[in-house]
Length: 363
Image 1 (tube, helix red, strand yellow):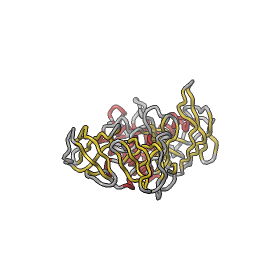
Image 2 (cartoon, one colour; image 1 turned 180 degrees about the vertical axis):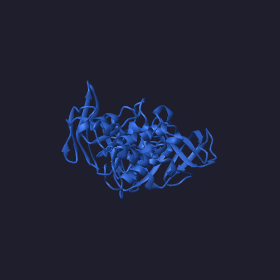
Image 3 (cartoon, one colour; image 1 turned 135 degrees about the vertical axis):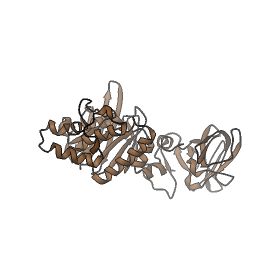
Image 4 (cartoon, helix red, strand yellow; image 1 turned 90 degrees about the horizontal axis):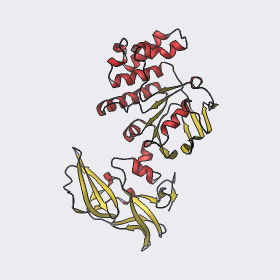
């Protein structure tokens, strides 16, 4: 097991900055997920850690050893690719054992058998990749990495080629494997469900920069920016423009269809406010949003109503049936403590007492 430290890591491709001064610590034994949309720099960052893409600037340290300029084979890291990169002419056993044979290790058969048992591949050792399912190929690719006993595993969207049912099962397998191995995992995905269910911490990237680093609970409950708020959640937080006003000594966010109490503080600032779909409920109250239903989606046991509020939209999620239809006028209320508040200029989270002041700006 190893720790990884990234200091000001940057990668430019001509005039394009793919990774922009990222600094990040990955603890020994951690399952860190690099999460973000396509093109945000997460795979480039992983490839720089692996030594497959040289950085333009910054440093990478493995257990406090500078490996920025080290060749991939000198890094004691194992990478699992999205495509699995299996040798089609080799059996499962020979695919798994390939890194050991390349190093002329004498214990190839014993190590392959050990890894196959961990991954449930004992009955497949004589097959070739073309005879395997997608999930089985994924496990073989992981086994080829695991057999080396690396300091850390680097996984680049390894589940993206699997169907939905298999992804769910394989997520559970990977999480259990990490728990048993206690190894360091750095995992790239654009799928927030993978991040929320597998990670010990999530690093959210946007445009090559870190937006927020925290546990799944921290990233979900207290998004540090409008980007994180709009990216995490299904549906995500809808952001509504409003103005902070001091009314009878109390601070309120007021706008088209918006009238929300915020406790104490100073008014006179333009903000963006939002509430997660599961925290809204139908009815009037002191905290109120008023709008028009535009779409109702049936998710089986639940429904999601998409509601236009002024120039923005929010979503209401609850048990089916919500008894709403497109065109209905609706009032929504929520617990004031569930309101998320962001600066309209910087997009950063604004803190309201008694929230912790991490990664945020005070009102």
